[in-house]
Image 1 (spheres, helix red, strand yellow):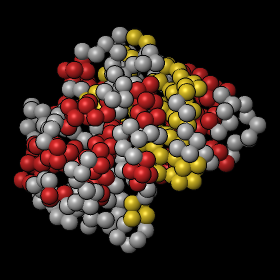
Image 2 (image 1 turned 30 degrees about the vertical axis):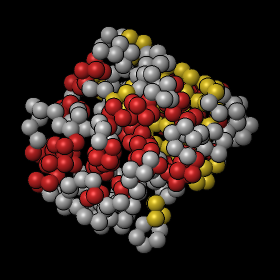
Image 3 (image 1 turned 90 degrees about the vertical axis):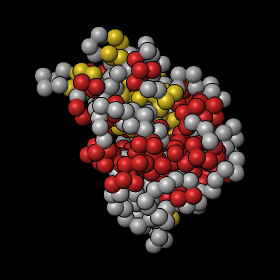
Image 4 (image 1 turned 30 degrees about the horizontal axis):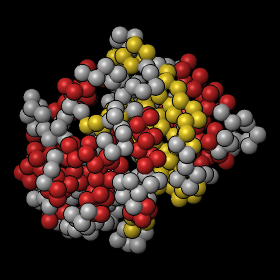
Length: 361
């Protein structure tokens, strides 16, 4: 996730005539994306009411199965906001504190790191995937205990001192899920179902194993172009292998969901159903670095305090064959959700069009 995403959206407002018709902007963009081969679901809502939803493309390119609006997609890093919520719920239950040292919960070779720094990607911990890629037996499926074991065994150095700067870290969110398990004595996946998915009625949302996903008829497979320029299942590519041999990891990804389920999640964040609004305000606050400057990533959310529609929080996801995004204009309760299953370049153009349409609806 890069600041360029925000700039892309903000510039769209700056250079677009205010007289353009409302939803026509989005409809035209969707039709253009359709003609250029985009595959996915687009949802735009205000105050929880769906203003626009469309499914275009294919659930399976090999079998020519059309996508439906309620098909299930891999969320990739959009999952991080759920992991952050689990930490926030633990904090409200008195099971941990944001400024607790990570070493209080996990045996890791890195010192001086707090839970807050893991949440905000300011911890400086190294990339676990590089260590696992080099040393792990890929005929086996690794989970968090394996990742922690290998980080202890090979001890790659810290990237920077805790709190020095922001650098996006999947390792940090592996640690967070493991901290939840340590603090609660419960399995992270089971607890997420019990604390979040089931109470919110997110019936199509789960953390699924590859075997479980294969049994879900309406699971939208991720697709990448082969050498012939044809879309094929991303699992056929070596670049996707890590989603299999790291298939039991918890925290940085692996939530799969639908656009409508994500809207349920979005709306619950305006209430006290999961955590208090005071806690949510903290989640939407920038991190303070060691030198006193701010880093605009909160607890599982990228932040833009002054978008044309007020304060914006968002997150993207990127897995082989998938691009996902949720954009929330929290002062106006406006939401954009786009789930793409053929890694298409039109993704951000659709976000731009959806944002422009919301500004005029």
